[in-house]
Length: 329
Ligand SMILES: *[C@@H]1O[C@H](CO)[C@@H](O)[C@H](O)[C@H]1NC(C)=O
Image (cartoon, rainbow, N blue to C red; front, side, top):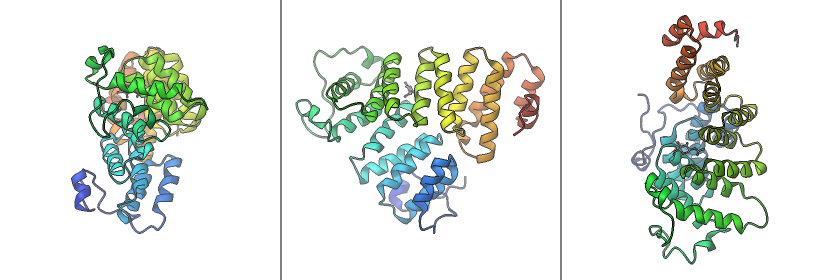
């Protein structure tokens, strides 16, 4: 493990480790370049540049926020959570960080914490915080339990605030006369997903996308929700849109492959997994996902009844497999 904790003690205690020899550590505009690499889909370089920018100014809450969302995009949810929390220590009402944190916490199965972050997003949001005035006794206190709330989704998920927070988001949506707030809709989608109301989550993500049609992360989230709700064909459309916007988006390509398997399109599934593995090898991004993709690839090949290709996948022979599927890249 080459990650040596170099920065200040407090960061190590927060659990964030930076690479010991960061090639960009003296760059003067590391932050801007990091943003650019992010837009280009080169997440590994983006992470290094953003870490360099934080080495230069550890109090830069925006750099922590962007590093957090980039880590999440690069499938390092734990690192993402640490960065976003670090941002929130420096800037407690950073709404982007709160929303991103809620998504990362959901992805890592920390539902109560995700609910708490979404609650804070309302509480710190100048547009909606008045909704809490007759509810929450003290800022920062545990969320009140309202009498008469239905408790079924709560107990199944272990998220005692889910119904409470869902009601808040729906109230906020109703008072939004001036139009769709894409962040509010994203939060609503995450909450409906947590309560397993997938069709409502789909509607919320679609509403957010009507305002942010270029948001490939959101298209991927819509796809995953459609797939969860057994709507694989629509999921394929959503993932395809995400990949048109960001062809190097490994997670979405992987998800697309899984939906192809569910639809019985095994050959398409294999081609997507091979593309993902090839892109991953080129960019060295999304390493965390590698074993998932290989495993999914083996499943698709076994469904195609191709023992010799399955064998190639077992030994990780990507080049042979790509030739077998006429993919020269
Ligand atoms: C939906 O919730 C599950 C956990 O219950 C999580 O793994 C998944 O990432 C969530 N999906 C979205 C789109 O938020």
